[in-house]
Amino acid sequence: MPLLLYLTDERFSLYLDLTGEPLNRRGYRVEAAAAPLNENLAAGLLKLAGWTPGTPLYDPMMGGGTILLEAGLMALNIAPGLKRHFAFEHFKNFDRIEWQRLRKDAEGARRDPEPLPIFGSDIDPLMVRAAGLNLKAAGLLDCVRIMEADFLNVNPPTPGGIIVTNPPYGVRPSTDDMPTFYREIGDNLKQHFPGWTAFMISADPEFPKLIGLSSNRRTPLFNGPLECRFFEYRLVAGGNRKPGK
Ligand SMILES: C[S@@+](CC[C@H](N)C(=O)[O-])C[C@H]1O[C@@H](n2cnc3c(N)ncnc32)[C@H](O)[C@@H]1O
Image (cartoon, rainbow, N blue to C red):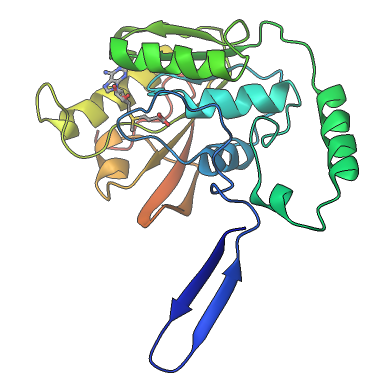
């Protein structure tokens, strides 16, 4: 049974670990991406965006596909802990029968896999492979459509819907020119995604200025220790460019 002991000069604290692996680990991440979002943050972003299953969802910079995976689990009513083990299962007084009943209920509530209006793409073929392996591990490979594509050259997968994504942060590998890239993302959204609402999380304080679109909402969030903002842009043909941009 995992016990944690913290000692300082004057006191000690003893913790009983009920979960073992942190709760955000769902058991589907078999291939890591370069800068993956925490699974619980990805699920929270979908809730903050007001996304509900049935609304088309697109992550055009999907990395290992965390946002798509969390959406797929929600859409098929798959309990996020269903594939994992918890430390409390080793407790002496653990009620195995009750736990099995709860698991059986959750299994019974899960919907059969079906094609969902959930789409993802990434410019990096290794990330497309990683997302595919993770979706397969979660039993979602036939439900979510993914492809290799540069977001700056891609057509919307449906006439309208919600984008939830976290663009790269820091240095862009090919050109080192992140300001231009953010500006191009803004231009692309403006030109090709009217009717969509785009939600983007960024820790870059320059991001809102560089993207050059007027946000409808910005929510402060933490990605681990990193302070971020979650921006909402409702894209209307001809209407989002900031004055003077
Ligand atoms: C911060 S990561 C996304 C991580 C993802 N949310 C996850 O949880 O794994 C940003 C991603 O943007 C991708 N990317 C960078 N430039 C791109 C472009 N022009 N078009 C599409 N994807 C791009 C990178 O390959 C990277 O996988």
